[in-house]
Image (tube, rainbow, N blue to C red; front, side, top):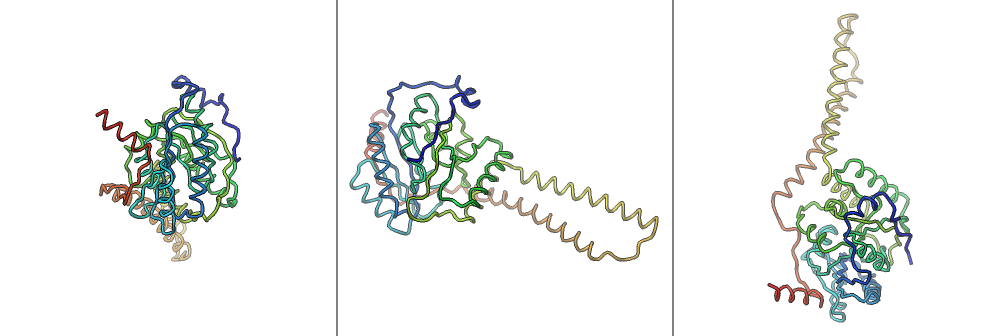
Length: 350
């Protein structure tokens, strides 16, 4: 089992939040929703269902497994339908096309019903066996228990290094503190999910949104396993675009950097112009320096294009947001028993 020691209860972050906690009964068992977006995961979806269901049945609480099909082109949806037909605890949310993992995850959070919600990747890199430990954090009064990866097995050194650099970069420039080395694997209470559902921006960086809503949180350190089967859908180009989403969604630092760079270049240009004028007046200066002139023109042109590109990234995101399109469209929903029960209870209470 891939697990590690829980984070120390005496860490500074934990001590600062103790006064905000409202502990729950030691034997409390909330209804649990597992949200798992999936895109072309036919090799692992059946085993994922088996392991998750086995662990949730051992806990003994009411539960549902919300499987979100993000426009899969293989047999993932057919397998989801088969699982739902055999297991009333399974809910299938079939999106109309591929919208990307961040939006598929949001769709799952919108449709789940449990008092607590656990986000899991369908590839089983995040172990469902840690859910009982997350529930212990919930009983202590925390609203969010998020997984922190002590090790990422099965990943190349390049991916690990770039991930570490990204988390440290965004941590230094973001307006909110985003925990390092975390993914989507976490447990959240219903009030956290409810507040997340109010955040409808199209360009979504869920790790940042999880941090932005706040509420008492506690880390859980674990070792991340390699994929059970299949291949990752995250190539370096998609990871690069996700990094851009994170940076542009939670900081305007690139715009400030472009401004500071422009001011610095302009100041240096004025100094150089003053030097050229002085040199011409004092010693004369025959026409020469074509290579240095070419370098200066190309450098200034490059700086301008970079600044325009940074500005374009932000303007493009504004363009997409102001259109006000829905985040996703649903083709079909096959509800779980928990979802049906909760919906009936809501109708009766109203």
